[in-house]
Structure formats: structure tokens, C-alpha cells
Length: 233
Image (cartoon, rainbow, N blue to C red; front, side, top):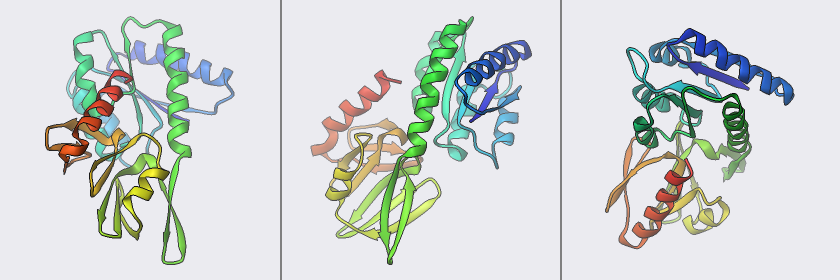
């Protein structure tokens, strides 16, 4: 498991790293822990190599945690982000970057262990789930965590992922029935992964960096599902 810690306070990084390493060793989970002293260093370090779990200080010098996470989502959309902060007021800004949990400074070791355990489960859950597409006599496997949305054009469906697009033939209603509850219909032509939705309006939602239409019939269910996601973040 790849763990990243980004904090401009060296002693806090070292302390957190020790707790995480000890806990994962006790669970028998192999890990590599990398430390970064700034948001810029983190982004540079993760350009070519992804991480599984990130502990990120919100209020760092230079590029702060929220801005860092916003840029990070473009290159690592599925990394599990845990914000560390001494400022509770910043918590609500984390919804737009899909923060998994928050830890308030000064943190307690039992809280770190608890959140780490949940993050490991979340990372594994995301790794193990796929959607399978039959395409030209072959079977293609798409990780659910990388799927932004499905778009239907009659019987032709486009699966839009963080890495590109795949076109195949299916009915959107059949796809919806096969997927977990994290995918929700927002339009008769669109089925989105709620994990990638950062904002909703009366007639649209922001999925990844794209603004997608939301029909009147789907508006209420989307709003309720989005609210539940925020409450459980």
C-alpha cells in the first residue's frame, strides 16, 4: 500500500508516519510511506506514480491543501484523501475534492488508527470493483473508480473514464441495474459515478471537469444522493 503524507511540519510528518507504519505492520499490510513538505512537491512526486492513501494538511505554506487536492484529483482521481487540520472551518471546502475523512490537530493516535483502517478498506473496495464490457469479441475490464459517467446514444453507449473513452452497444437501463448504488441516473441519456460529482445545480451537475445535464425527473433523487454522500464523507 502506497501512503503519502504531506505537511510542512517535519515533526508532525515523522510522528504520523511512525503511527501509520506501526499500525499497518500489525495488520500485516506491506506499505511504502512517502513524505512531502509542500503541495508542489506532492504534485510533482505523484505525476508518474499514483498513491493509495494521502494524509494532507489543509493549511500549508505556499500551495494550501485544498488547492493541492484540487490539482491532485486531475492526475489521481481515486486516491483516498484524509485532511489534517487545526481549523474546523476548512472542513466544508473539502467536499469539492471528495475528501474521505478529516482529522483535527492535535490528533490522537487512536483516531489515526481508526481513520487509517477505514481508508484501507475504502482503497481496497475501490481496487476490487470493475465493470466488464463486451467489445468486438473481447472482454474489457474498467475499474469502477475510474469511470466518470456513461452516455447513451440510442443503443450505443460511451463509457467516459479518467483515462479516455470506450464505446460499446448496450442499454443504459441494463448498465444501471448491474452497477452499485454509487452510480445514479441524472438524465435519460446519462448515468454518473457519484464519487466524481463535485457540484449539482437545478439543471446540471459537475462530474470530473464536465458539466452534464440533469433532467427534472432525476433532480430530486440526485440531490438526495449527493446530500447523503456529503453527510458520510
